[in-house]
Length: 380
Image 1: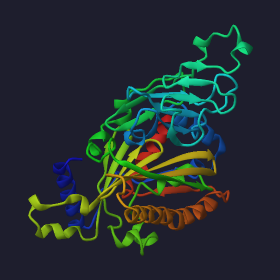
Image 2 (image 1 turned 180 degrees about the vertical axis):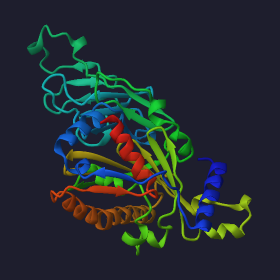
Image 3 (image 1 turned 45 degrees about the vertical axis):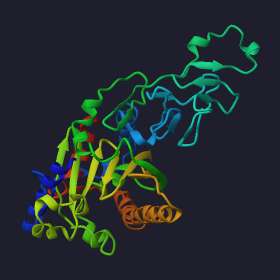
Image 4 (image 1 turned 30 degrees about the horizontal axis):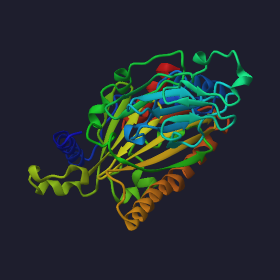
């Protein structure tokens, strides 16, 4: 959002504070406990949502230079995304044409000499457009058609600072349809020019949707985070805006009412607000005063999931002291999620798996949770 849009959103939040209310869905939603526990349903979701639906790779600044790559296999298909020397994004099935070994296993890195992808198993090499360059002991492969042995390409699109890839090489997508207009919320958030501080991986022993539910409402701040987030932001108060399958929610700091005594022309809205931007089906972009974070959640099984938490700064730390300060803050946010949210969600998971039939209730004050489950149901 630009400054004018931030001011509008701030006014909406001030009105909610004054009225002591929050954005509301039209009705209460109930979903069956099997949504979280049924193994067959999980298989349907994994195919429909993580194999046959475009996946958010990350912000464009994750791959700033030619030769930068990002590898992940959490969709069930090993994927390698790389920026070529012309600055164009490319994506491939991360499997060598020889014996299927992954060309790169580390999440982020630089291609060899910035120009070459080399298999660690037998040394077959490819250029950044996926063409086969070299075969060691080439005489042992006399007669093979090198033109047909390039890497298998996947559709990848980059727009407005967003990178998306389609895991299924047989399918195509329209990036504008996938974004649904949410790019307007993040137009000036720095998706194209921020510095990637790092990524933390957290393995969780519960269903991936339980994981995602925690990001989609502010109702729990006061009860679950009384000494952390509850000391900074209003509980059970926020805006809600839908963009296609995605949505955005605004949150207010406890001191936002200070703005009532300040001329609007002097407002600094990002000091008093934060925003959760949901990218269907499994990503949240969390925008706070001076940086943004991404949380990507992937299913491992019907009762296991993995979270990748990344932090992006306006610029790289300029001193060791600043680096330590930023990393400590990054760790603190991660620790809050693990020790407060995930510890409780693990207990919820055990209760849902008790075998007792029941419904899960999602209130009108949880429109984000409702939208996520509604969109998932529409594709599964």
